[in-house]
Length: 190
Image 1 (spheres, helix red, strand yellow):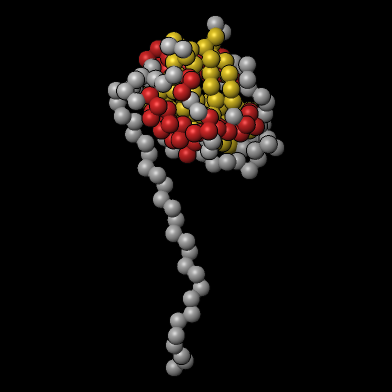
Image 2 (spheres, helix red, strand yellow; image 1 turned 120 degrees about the vertical axis):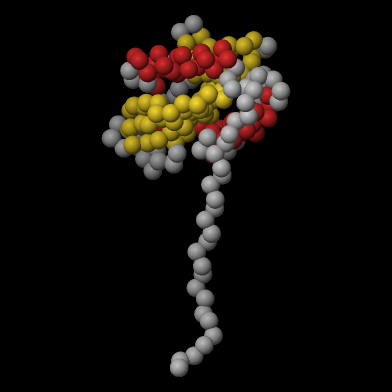
């Protein structure tokens, strides 16, 4: 996981679940995810497939519309990709395993954007196959956010996060040292 939002959501979910395969939906505290909330969403399993129950503001701005009540698979334009996403969400629920995927996208004006998708299972009132917690965030916050929207996405990488295996997070990027400040050294002309 490379994006800060994705890391934060995963670490919070992982701490909540403890030794369990998945935490309860009622245990999720939005305030604990306040720095990632704009990229976070929750899916509900419906007969038509996964449907957005909640979606963060930055995610809605990326897509260009409110996502609540909309099918998750509708984010992908072609039928084959929609089937792949439906199967991925079903695998997350069936196996109580998380998934992290790299996505390549393009805006309506043709600007490329790289995103990270995280899907994590949740229990709801003791039931499995009920909800999924997720995050979808760009690698870098695009300067076109609010002016342009995503037109298409495709998955370019996928990794499953199995419950018995500890997740390997990418190392934190090192902070660059501040450039040296102007300094006058004593001396003279020779």
